Length: 359
Image 1 (cartoon, rainbow, N blue to C red):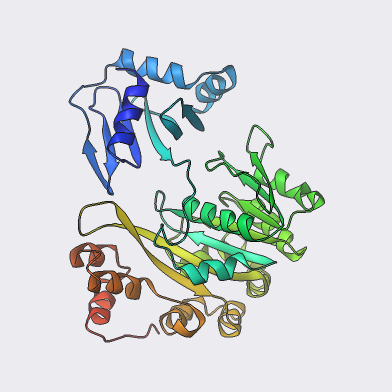
Image 2 (cartoon, rainbow, N blue to C red):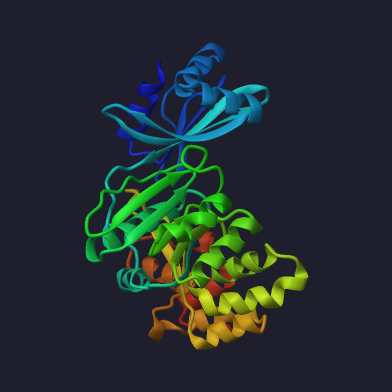
């Protein structure tokens, strides 16, 4: 079997991720669960051949040889686009491929909170964050928001990604997409000059270090709307993570800046649908109201959860309410919802119509 056959199998079974490894049978993540997709065991020779095909140029081969790990986009003709990560385990290559859908779906189709997404898309400055574990729809959500902005307003959007996943076509807006190590060497270097490119909106694929975070804050203070993603599970953890990027003696200053620039967060978790057909997002939404801005400024970040729980008037919703809503609507099994909850006890109380405030 060659690699295109595995990609075809993956797409046919509507899998989100494909897993290939030497002396193992191919597996794929289907509706959130990792299942076998073939009884064929991959030999060392076959795995080496797959890697050679995918590492199609000298630059990729050199990077993999040096780092033993590489991340890039691969396009398989007439099958689709895939985000590939090739890494080394037990001295042999292995890979994970994620199917990147060419069609950018709208908020309704993705089962996202439509009005809150539209509200954040209409911001003209500040910082907006989509958070969640890997593979839970962060990039897909951002792509949907960028496409919505592209369809309704005339702006200059610059994306900085590693690698570029969704491809946009200019509509009302003009969109320039930059890929790390092809168009620019790092996020901080891209952000150093991006304000001279007259952007209205900047999308940073992922903030992983203090230099990128500092550059993103500076961009918002110069009047740009910055969108980004974090591998954090909820709003409170996201804010804590941002503050902890910096040394303790700067925490007061960073909290002050965050209280002025942060517009809100959407945190995502994809759950298996009760009918077994696909996955559906549970989400927490936080809007930075004057009260939440004050809590950030004063370092009372963990108290924010109480206001998310009670902030329906402002478009906020907690994970537990989102999970309970999906259970009551018959979209998600109660056991799955409880498993994905931050707190099983809080979920059980919410399911019974009770609540407990976090002290």
